[in-house]
Image (cartoon, rainbow, N blue to C red; front, top):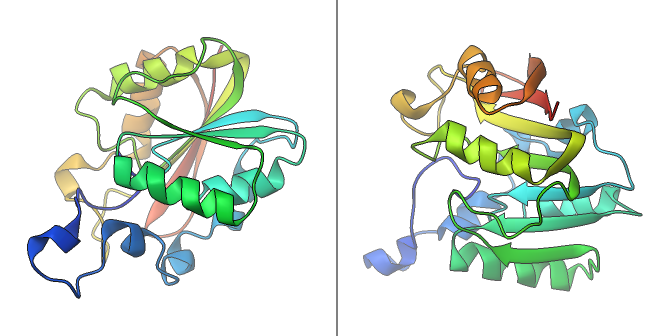
Amino acid sequence: MSTDSDHAHSDHASGHPDMPTSVERMLRPERVATLDQFRVLSHCPVNPRDTVVDVGCGPGYFTLPLAKFLINGKVIALDVSDEMIEACRSRTDEARMGNVEVLKCEEYEFPVAPASVDGVFIAVVLHHPSDRVRFLTAARQMLKPGGWCFIVEWQKRETESGPPQEVRITADECRQIAEDSGFRFQKSQELNTNYYMATLINS
């Protein structure tokens, strides 16, 4: 569920010591060219006072920019992977981000009280779970009434990198999953040829 394009687990255990780990790959500088955190956040309905859950935070690719924006708010960063949790914690500690809590979660179970947060941020994660409605329903349960959910996903077209076509979700499919999960689908828009964004409201 980590925010990356492929289902890679500890590549460094594969006997290729020069292979980058999934953490390094997810933080590579070139990634900003197609997935610019600040451009993405400029479209996100986040408020500086919000409490936001970053689901599938990975090594904190979006966690840190969110934390910097949430000057009077907080980020709860969740991931299923111990490796990602450790990487995200060390990066937020290094950046001295006191408004970030990093917690381990299960794929469909999040350690956050129901109806307690303002926003849920899900970047390049929704294509991972096999039961996407169950996943988004669990995400929605964390939100206060009227809370927002912001999704970034791969376009369902050929791109240089990214997951196989069969697991990708179109914006229309995303809308259907959102509505089946109890959300009101507010809008979707293309970020670039690789990604699109969608805003959902917990109605």
